Length: 321
Image (tube, rainbow, N blue to C red; front, side, top):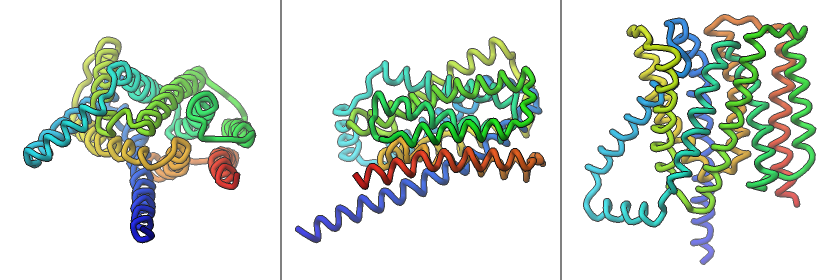
């Protein structure tokens, strides 16, 4: 009995460590997306069109991978997988909500905002916005976080944004970009919370939470993009960026991220996601040659440390209690 229990504990711990590693890898891939998006915009493609094409490629890739896996499994395994999927069937309205919030809102609006502000600014606002909205959702729904420290941390993070933008010369494009990024944060947080809720209560398989919502989101973004932005002029660099964003940073990364949510709590996923704040800033400096002032570096550190404090402190306080 003791050995069996130890084995189960070891397996859970191994899955937890693998989930952390997978989530960290995803943040590295997603961080490169900010830079690739900026380069793609230079090839005169609209944000909704770029996002729609990216996730259309991701959805097609996932379909092809699923077909290959089905062909390689024997009849008994296939029947068992089918029976399992029939027992855990995702409701249609869940698919629509996940598609609209996780892709049309979280990605589409974010891409529009990225055209108006720098990758570092985008990452910083996302870090604060996602954490703030997630805390609000947690209070009324998930209830995995506790303590007033969360709100104190958000206030410090907001102060970091004030320092970052000193001397507060907001142009029209900057303000619009910030509003759009914050709107995308609401979509991201709702998508993350609903995904965590469905997985936690055994109401969905990880694969079902990626493919159909992604396809719905991609279709919606393509319709909006082609209607308002028109058909882009494709070049080989642009095609390469779209394929990389779709296959590697899209289907692979989102599959790994969704799998990690099965073993990590929502705030743990959000904590790891905040690594992108530093990763994007470094890539912004190294690749796009952006110069950061002392105030901007100080603001980034305040935001990063505040967001990390919110989640780590709440985590240890819960375990202590």
